[in-house]
Image (cartoon, rainbow, N blue to C red; front, side, top):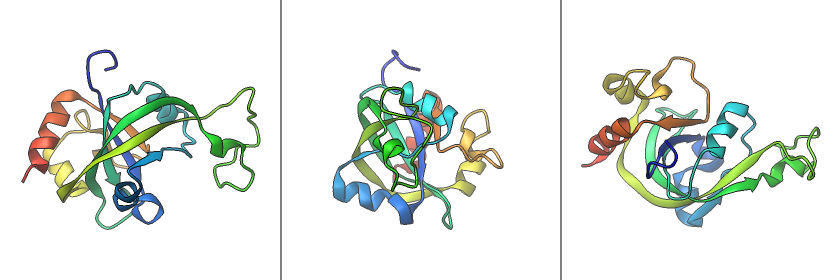
Amino acid sequence: MAGKGVAYWLMKSEPDVYGIDHLRQETTTLWDGIRNYQARNFMRSMAIGDQAFFYHSNTKPPGIVGLMEVIETGITDPSQFDPSSKYHDPDTNPDTPRWDCVRLRYLREFPRMLTLDQLKESFTVDELAVVRRGNRLSILPVPDATAVRLFSLLAD
């Protein structure tokens, strides 16, 4: 995906922890606290200008609610060094950080949520990994053709 223009991602967050309303108010955020190697590696492959669908997870119903843009990459996640953070990693240190993050900018909220049930009706697992039963990964790549279809479904 990288190097071919804008890549698309789906990034999950629980709305009561950090939702689209928080991002809209703050305008930018550090997407820190990711403690899964595959999700971290997806973040490492992001480029400035990439766009991410903001997905509210662990809520009824879960679904896509907005759009963000990657504005900074390659940031060492500061929460890994903070003993008071729930994301503290005692096995890492500033000389050999294990966890990275990106900075995102609010682009927009969609007029309506595209729920997980609607996503399951419209996409296969190969097209959109979030529809896979039991998928708990918080950051997922979205193929270009799928992103085009998502934008089409969200436009009304």
